[in-house]
Amino acid sequence: EPEVTQTPSHQVTQMGQEVILRCVPISNHLYFYWYRQILGQKVEFLVSFYNNEISEKSEIFDDQFSVERPDGSNFTLKIRSTKLEDSAMYFCASSEWSQETQYFGPGTRLLVL
Amino acid sequence: SQQGEEDPQALSIQEGENATMNCSYKTSINNLQWYRQNSGRGLVHLILIRSNEREKHSGRLRVTLDTSKKSSSLLITASRAADTASYFCATVKAAGNKLTFGGGTRVLVKP
Image (tube, rainbow over all chains, first blue to last red; front, side):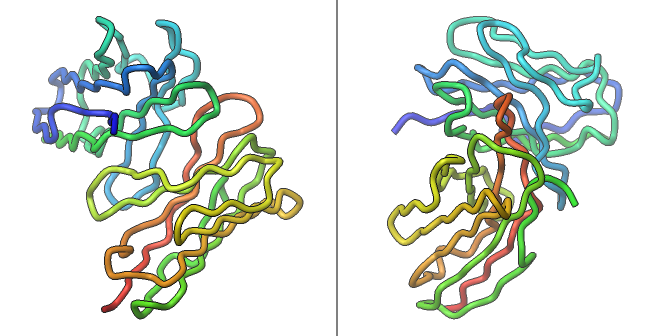
């Protein structure tokens, strides 16, 4: 069964460093998303992406964040200058159509020291 | 409270018993989705119910939706130890496609 994959599974970085989290959505899906879950808290929406542009973003998704679909398969989330409070589990998701089931990847656990 | 709040926050049952958890939300929705998360792991999609549907089944899962009360319930019948996990409801508003998650219900199924 097709699934969303994410790399790396864990990432440790120093505050102020840039990180890139990678995702491979399900191949025939058109909509892509990033969410995050700070330990012990709710899953929070960050951004949605369709047709090579951001379709919606949350207040969390400020200028430090960016997303890109550099080729036909990868979808990346970049954090330019990480902060301690960026430590969280980051989930990528994809859906075939808008307002349909979103399938999540296993997540990248980011720890900012 | 925020969009998508689950009740109870935690539930402990014996294997074989049924588990019921509820979700309330605030705004009009296009659909509501239930997910399962094992500790520290990814989110597994369980079921999607649309605003014009009242009930859906999938295996041992039964989901109801009452849009007049802005609430949904997830019933797991004949629970198993493997059902131990956190269960989240998430709503998609009438406009847009982002999921708004609740805080989840932690379910412990004791063998």
